Length: 116
Length: 116
DNA sequence: GAAGTATGTCGCAAATATACGACATTAAGT
DNA sequence: ACTTAATGTCGTATATTTGCGACATACTTC
Image (cartoon, rainbow over all chains, first blue to last red; front, side, top):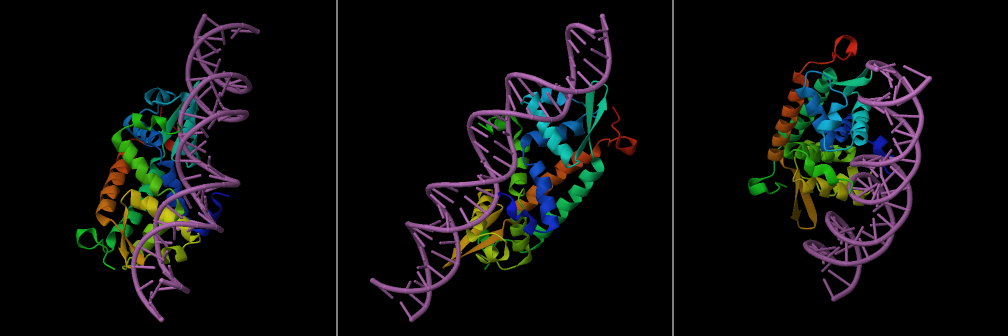
């Protein structure tokens, strides 16, 4: 029952944390950066570029695909992955709104002391 | 040795994923939003607002504090927590750079098909 | 000093995440 | 058909996360 209390939070909080969890591993950050840098949607070449086994990379790809952040298309024997740019833009907006909300208020007092 | 391969990634990728992991739980997102909404740095009132036990909330606070995203100051019997706004702004910039990089390239082809 | 309150830490149980080898599947080439 | 190559899935071992109760600590207040 580790995640039993998840339902008690806002849908917004849940969604933000879900996306954050997808980015909570350097391999998945690297995958997104890789897909962004190459215009062609490379497939298993991703595994070759990462310091992980092909199996592990495939799992990370499935996690990103489960959130629809990336999409895979079978092209004969290989599989092409590409970024879901539209969704990434929406996610970006959501993160921006969160950070703006978090940074708009009063900060800690002088020399990082709380201003209680 | 679950995280044995972490060192093989970029420092940037590691840092981004570390922060993302801090936001990868709705309770921690909620804590940051709470601290942002109240100008006074509430202490254990945070636990009262969340659907979790005081112990669990305290752990989430320690995780955020370990990354210096929030700071705690002992004020007599209670402890005041507040957001590290400066760090949050820097993190925001880092996330924005990441998302801009990820959304600048070509998206999937028409009707979400890969353009390999 | 005794009692009460607010916090944090420790220890434990259950659920997840990470990583990889072995296997199954599918498609291309011969 | 047979082989080869590219992917994904399954099973498994280990590490981490999550959640909470019990305890220890520290600081008021009486």
